[in-house]
Image (cartoon, rainbow, N blue to C red; front, side):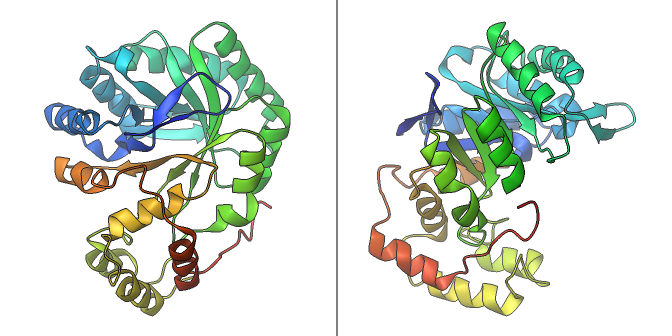
Length: 303
C-alpha cells in the first residue's frame, strides 16, 4: 500500500488508516482485525485514551506487542476521564497532558507514541499551554509528532499559526465537504497532513449504504434530507466502482489528505475497504461529477 509522509516529520503512514474505536472489547477478535489490516499493507492505527476508558489502548497495545517497530500508532488526549465512574471532562491543560501521556504509554505497552493528538478543543482553550506540553513531550522523545483532531476551522487555524503540528484529523467525506471550503487548502499550504475520518459517512457511503441510510438517515444528515440521501445513493450505485471505493477515492483526491481513516468491527470490513489500490486516483472528470451529485456544505459555527 502507498505510504505518505506525515507533515514535516520523518514518519510515513499508509494511505488508509485503521480507526480502532470500532474494534470492540473481544481481544482476540480485535487482534485478528488488526492483523488483517496489516496484511493488507496498513501500517497506521488510530486510537484514543477515552475509547472504552483506556481499554481500547490496552487492546491495541496487546495486539501489536511483537510488531511495534512495524507500526505507526496514533492516540489522543484531552478528555480527563475516570474509568470507575465512566465520566469525563475536557482538560487540555499542560499538567494533564504531561501526566496522561504516561498512562497511554503504559496501556499501549510502548515507550513512545508516533503521533499524539489533542482530542478536540475550542478557541477558548489555553492553546499556548497545550502546545507547550506537546513540545516538551517531543523534546523528551515520548512522542515523535503531534497534532489535533478537530472539525473547528478557528481552532485549526490557531494551531496552524502557533504550533509545529504535523497533522490534523478532521471529518471529511463526499457527504461532508466542509473542510474543502475552510481548511484543506490552508493545511496543504503549510505542509500539514490531513487524516480524513468518517470517509464512509456513518456507512451511508459504504457498500451497505441503503441499510445505513434507513437506519441513520431517516431524519436527514447534515444539510441532506432522507430523500436527498436516497437520490445520491441511486446515482452513486450506477458507477462501476463500489460505494466504498468511490468514497475513499473521493477524499484521497485532495492533495492535503495523507490518509483516510476507516473503522472496522470485522475482517470483512477491512477487506471491503482495502480492495481499492491506493494508487488508483480519481480523475478530474469523475471528481467534478461526484461533487455535482452532493453539496458543498460550509461550517456555520467556529469560523
